[in-house]
Image 1: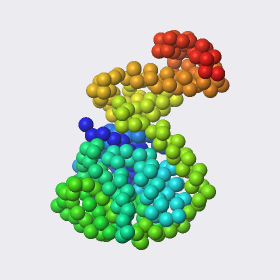
Image 2: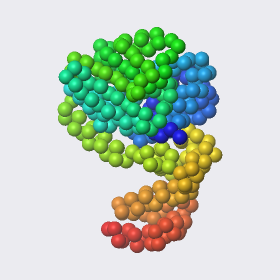
Image 3: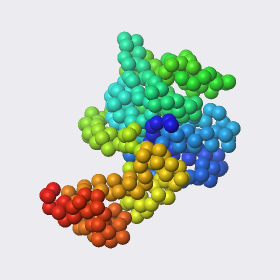
Image 4: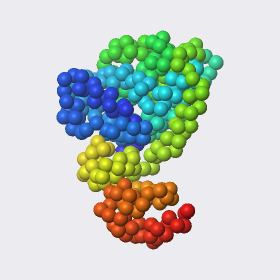
Length: 329
């Protein structure tokens, strides 16, 4: 199974494009738009499937390039604002290498510098996402850099691990540089002159504040070890909406309840167990903060009443919520 996840912001670009073609995105893709948010994630396997559905329906083999080319700084949340505050495109690329997982957590990015150029490279450690996913990601990176420093912010070399397509003209038109296919790694290379291009919106003071926010988000980001990418965030969102059930969590992950159950079983766990884990973590947080009553906590965790919450908490910890709160305060 392909590992990794991406920001829901990428997926919204696809939904928008399908709607612009006069077709209902939710009907065609057979799911609702994912909830936007800094930590809202979609499994890369789901993302690949959505791109394949749309590509087949519209007979558009270059859909990855099309969607990626639409990426702007406002589509990637705090990372986009951080980049806008950088003084040069090179500095923005350094930020990207530090916080890439906020928007794209599949194969890790390596940033390499030489006296002539800066190279951004991705291997295949987490698997091969496929042509559509890779095209979208790399086109998105180039579009992102152009949105920061202008249309002249163009690489001089781009390589792909995927085989050469039948028609490379769309790639030549978009990237406007030397291209290579069937390579051992994906690479985007920028001359140092391009990396030195200034960003008009540079703001050093705001940059520091955004750095701090991005680091806090990175710590909270679901790891590759999560049973299903985005599960914890989707469960928290479902709890907040009062719909803490398998169907609603699966819906937020853009998959069927049966698929979610199967993937959890493959990871050696189950939905109720993971729901209990999320509820327990949140319960401990709320009890430690001390401001919410037991009834309010029960409501926030989607229990029927505070006695049901107290019973569940005691079952999982061996302590009553009152005793836990007393011990931590």
